[in-house]
Image (cartoon, rainbow, N blue to C red; front, side):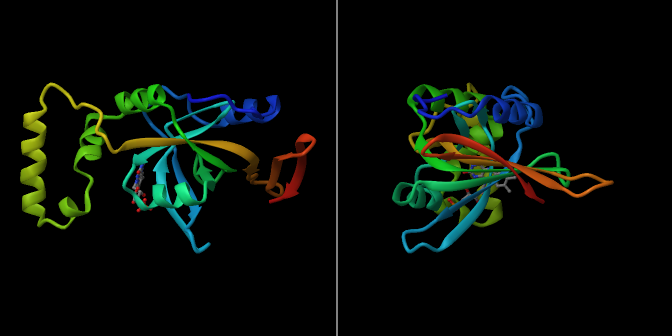
Amino acid sequence: MTGTASHPLPAEAWELAAEWLPPNDDPERPQVTLSTVDVDGAPDARTVLLSSFDRDGFAFHTDAASRKVEQITARPLVALTVLWPGFTRQLVVRGRAETADDAALAGAYAARSPYLQQLAWLNSHEFAALPLDERRRRWDAFEREHADGFEQPAGWTGFVVRPTRLTFWVSAPDTASRRREWSLGPGGWAHEYRAG
Ligand SMILES: Cc1cc2nc3c(=O)[nH]c(=O)nc-3n(C[C@H](O)[C@H](O)[C@H](O)COP(=O)(O)O)c2cc1C
């Protein structure tokens, strides 16, 4: 992953995250709600895949021309909500999104499926506006032209969210759900239990 975090996750929170989430080499990636705010302070949200995580942060990847990148560039404070597995566990990460370094970007692109690698090339508003038949025709043609594989497109980018707060929510069939929360303050990481 990228850069040097000044506040890596506390050991217990890191162990819990590693126990909850699939390992980075598992092709089944968790779906994450990425929440941002725009320049006017209005909220926005969408689903992304959690590409990887380590003790320094949680990484996702996207198109540099996307709305989320415009918002993060203006206001890098974001939240990630990971529901994994569904209905039983929720992890909410608040933090600052930092652009991933080149090596991490290349590794993440290489790890994407061929479909997602091609999507990164053809994911434009102009393409989206074409009739379905034409989108299929251009998709097939592009695939044939790149039978040897896809280079990383110039617009491929990604971020690592450096956590300032992690909230682990867990349900139980026979007692109340509850949350365990780690927050980063001036004195370092603090832990508390909260109602579900
Ligand atoms: C299950 C699922 C996974 C997705 N994964 C990603 C992803 O990893 N990266 C991405 O840029 N968009 C992903 N998308 C598309 C985004 O939700 C979103 O539509 C797109 O990135 C444009 O968002 P924006 O206009 O807010 O930037 C995914 C959508 C779904 C439903």
